[in-house]
Length: 319
Image (cartoon, rainbow, N blue to C red; front, side, top):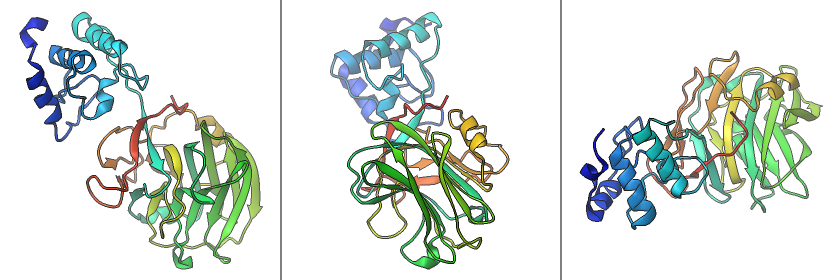
């Protein structure tokens, strides 16, 4: 192991190294402040400079949070020193979520024919910020303001209390079930299912909160899948955090939803056609861990833009 003294650099050099990073390698991890894919004494020096000597902040910032407590302090430096010099446990590997501003932020997955399944289940963990800007906010959405593009959506309805709505396009163009009571500022698991007969069901924290029968036929269209925003106009923008979005081509039961809501998926579960856990923690894209492989994009354009939601450390109870 090299001596710490051998890698002590000037503040100017450290700032240049950190701020000059334009892209992160595939192996980016917590504590890897210089983005070279390994944890070394150089990272320890850079962490010290950042915390106590006015050095440049890590890029992306989350790499400096070595103990996953959403803060930057001595505990992060201690965790990194313990690993680099004492062969201690590696820094934590906490997950991430997307935070939406309630006005124009969105995440989008391009249309895939598998999304037009006759039966489906939509799941997500949400953390609602108050107040929502619009009376209805899109959580997961394949719904346009043109009836021909209205496939399905899971919405949040503003009110006291907030309620959940699932909608499917069909014979009446707006089949929708609204029910439940959702708290603000806490993680809540929400789900919406529709079976081949047109029976819609809504679930909160693994328990069914309501159901309603609708026509068995429904719309199939090339509408993209959006998270945190509608597919049309400037309305229905979600304000808060969203994590662990899952899409299935089966109508899952209450027992099945409750059994897996707190557990990460392997990606190979029968019927799973979309699984986005947002654990990238940085960048402009997020991966689909299901066999579909439908990579998503933040915002409306490739690369950073005004519509990008923010990466945040997730405290959703999925582990």
